[in-house]
Amino acid sequence: MERLQGIRACVFDAYGTLFDVHAPMRKLAPEIGEKAEEISRLWRQKQLEYTWLRSLMGVHADFWHVTGEALDYALEQHGVDEPGLKDEIMALYLKLDAYPEAAEALEAVRARSRLTAILSNGSPSMLDAAVRHAGLDKLFNMVLSVEDVGIYKPSRRVYRHAMQKLQIHDAPAICFVSANTWDAQGAAQFGFQSVRVDRFGLKDDRIPGKPAGLIKDLSELAAIV
Figure (cartoon, rainbow, N blue to C red):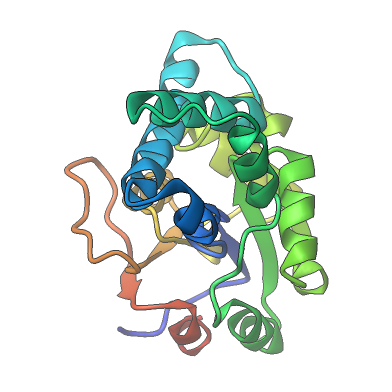
């Protein structure tokens, strides 16, 4: 894809973009059995659905709470009721694996004198744990959580919050990077130059917002910003 013009900062989604949300279930697959992958997919689906529903209902709870409720649903739906298992899975969620190219890609972006930030649904404590575990804590100028505004992405309030914190007043000067279709498109609709990481072979959702580009993984980002 062509190089984006006028970029001053790259703002990254966290879950699914920098961090592998399915890592916990893979690690516990020998214990959980053949249902592990399906449970993980349902957990992620409900986790996202609950953020959107709570935002529409005006009943906010932080991402740790929502993640736990979504896991409860997924385990119950599949008839898994093993004592202590939920706590073990949730503990692993604080130590998610970063995708293998993440650190080098971030260093390459910073080498181009671009600001780097995370803008995530995750609560501050969750993000701090994940970033530190992955050894990425020195690679961001700031880590921003929706908890500062009390509503989840893709609310325009969340994307505006990133502009305010970065002190960038021109939305197209921000490259927003996400592997989640709805997030990449929500950021594009807001006005960011959005780049979607096509980790999962998905098509754009049928919602407003068209990403400026598509990359196969984060290693391709520095060349276009």
